[in-house]
Structure formats: structure tokens, C-alpha cells
Amino acid sequence: MSARDEILGRVRAGLGKCDTAARRARAEALLAAPVRGPQPLIAEKELVERFAARAESLASSVGRCGKAAEVPAVVAAWLAENGLPATAVVTADVAGPGWAAAGIATMVRPARDADAVGVTGCFCAIAETGTLMLLSAHATPATVSLLPETHVAVVPAARIVATMEDAFALLRAERPGTLPRAVNFVSGPSRTGDIEQTIVLGAHGPCRVHIVIVGEPA
Image (cartoon, rainbow, N blue to C red):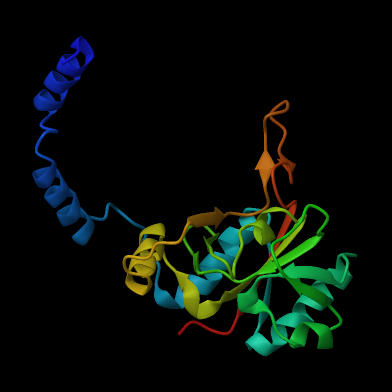
């Protein structure tokens, strides 16, 4: 045994790290019954309005529609209003023939640096912070929300939860034992204040985020 091994062995013993079975059991017990800290009380009927208000405070824009079939027309109108191209790369979960009917040419693939508009769904949204929770997968590549200058997110009202803890609880409930490769949180456009403390949007990702809330809470 080298001096290094001997020293590290003493450290592990002092920290109680030699009993890996006991440590694993304690960790699994904590994961099975997580303890939540203080959280804001947000009534279910207030989730949509709270989310929209918080998202707008973070420089996102918010649109509404009653049904998923109306999303392409709503997005097309917003793109035209803002002088943006009617061409977008979309994730598979929001793809469909409705985009062409609304006059938007779409491509279902990971985004490239030349793509101007990316349209995604989301796993859920968080009312407390106005944040989108996106899961990376083959059908929902993270690049679609990260590379284009404009990110449009489709958010079912029924998928808006109160807090970050609720979002992770939903993920564990719906995907037990199969966590995604990556979980991305989007809270408004990319920004930085590194240069003279001045906020600049779009420094490391999209310079605009538009959210379309679909339907009413479940």
C-alpha cells in the first residue's frame, strides 16, 4: 500500500465511507421520501396567470389559444407581426400538417446554426418562476431550443405546475427509473450582464422566447 492509499483510507474511514451498503440505503431512503422546504402557495386556478406573468417579467412574450390545432396559425401570426421568417425547425412532439396549412415551412430535425426559428413542446412549465422544463431525447433534441435566435415553446395549460419541486415530482412519476439524458430549464431569452453590467439578450442562445399556452388547466 502506498502512502497515498493509506492516507485516503484513513480519511474514508473517518468519514464513514467504507460502509457503501449503508450509505446506499440512506441515499435511497432520502430519494424515496424527499423532504420539501418552504414553498409558495399557488392555487391551481392561478397557475396559468402566474406562469404567464412571471414569463413576461423575464422578457418572454406569451400568446394563448384554445386548442392544439390552433397553434400553427397563432405562431404564424406572431412571426409575421414581428417580421420573422415563416420557416422553422420543430421537434417531433409538435410537428404536424397544420404548420404547412398556416404557411410555415417546417423541418423535423436537430437545429443548425443557420436556423432562425425553433419550435418545441415542453415537458412542463413552472408557475413560480416562469420557467420551461425541456427534456432532451431523440425526438426532442435540445438544439431546437438553443441554437435558433427565436425559440417558440408550446405549453399545454394542464402541464403548468406550481414549483420546481412539483416539476421534478412529475418527472419521477411519469418516467420512473428512466431519467432523460439532459433536462434543460428555460427562463426567458439568453442574457448576460458581463459587459459593463448591461443586460444583453441573446448572448449565449435565443434572443427572444415566445410561449404559446394551449387550453385551460386540467
